[in-house]
Length: 132
Ligand code: 5GP
Image (cartoon, rainbow, N blue to C red; front, side, top):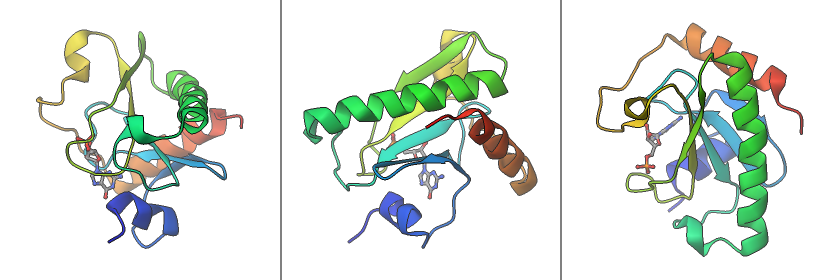
């Protein structure tokens, strides 16, 4: 069965898209740890990120860098934290989060919630700084 993220790629499940090319998609996390929390996924459905072929993994990291720098321009922060967990959704993804201190990256704290309008504005603003 297709993963939730594959359904996002096909448009069967909506998302607030930030960037896309032929290999990757970036969109806002539905339960953000931080404002601007973005997920980068390969269009190829592979569960474990270290099972990605080396070149694809390298390109995913460069795509994430591009998106991360765009998040940084949108959300004032000290830097963009990167993390890979993958315990919830079995489709490889990189979390990009604007952070100022270590705790900002904690997946154990209460998630944030924004209105659809706010998610839309955040995604649009980040997307405007992405240069693919
Ligand atoms: P992980 O698999 O790395 O533990 O966490 C998966 C992440 O995907 C979580 O932060 C969760 O909020 C996010 N997520 C799960 N389902 C959806 C979804 O349908 N849409 C979006 N945009 N994010 C999701």
